[in-house]
Length: 224
Image 1 (cartoon, rainbow, N blue to C red):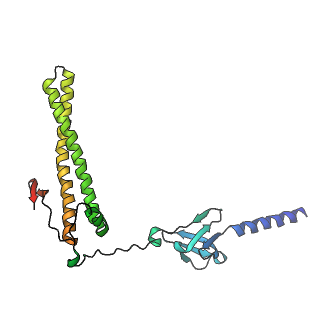
Image 2 (image 1 turned 135 degrees about the vertical axis):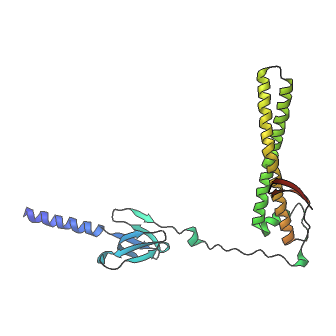
Image 3 (image 1 turned 180 degrees about the horizontal axis):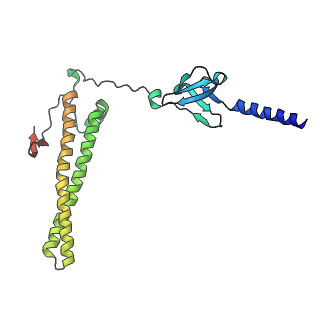
């Protein structure tokens, strides 16, 4: 009798295990598929029907799946990617008719550039940031250079002389890096402004200094 009870209990346990030894795929339209997941790829999964594990392999897109409950109890959910949820479209910027071209003013040029041509606006902002960093380097470098030179010429103690010399050298390095950075940043700003004017307005090019690259080095040109 006891042997029969043990056999029945063992059979029930094995049957229960078999029922849970499956993966459950829950689709976004609330369907539940009893399956054996064989592959999870970037955009899709592959599975076999649990009732026919020797049968064909099926494929489902991740975008159609809400979650998968694996046989070990682990649950994996699938969220749509940006590429699946957003269709990014770019509308070409069209130049307004010639009769509608209006001159730019210092008060509206940046707001108009940001609206009409975001790429040129980003170029302008990068150039302005570079030029601002260059100006800071030039100012700090100039102060260090002058202060260090004064300390060197008036020093009566070796420590003061050494500090002044180090400050002067650091200031010279900052000036050497700051001046080209300031000019390059200013050139990017002006190029963005002039390109915008030529595309969208009747304004003429703004005269400015421009740093040009040549085979023998850098050259400074005045564009008008």
